[in-house]
Length: 26
Image (cartoon, rainbow, N blue to C red):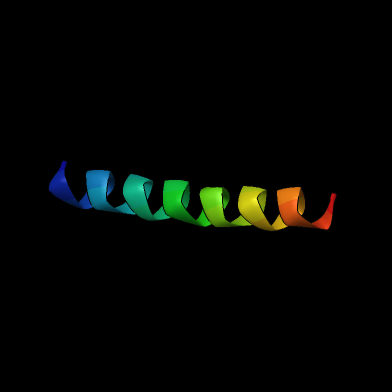
C-alpha cells in the first residue's frame, strides 16, 4: 500500500506541474 501511495503522489505532482505549465501558456 505504501508503494501505491507513493506512486499516486508522484502522479499527482506530475499532473500539477502539467496544469501549471498549461495555465502559464494561456
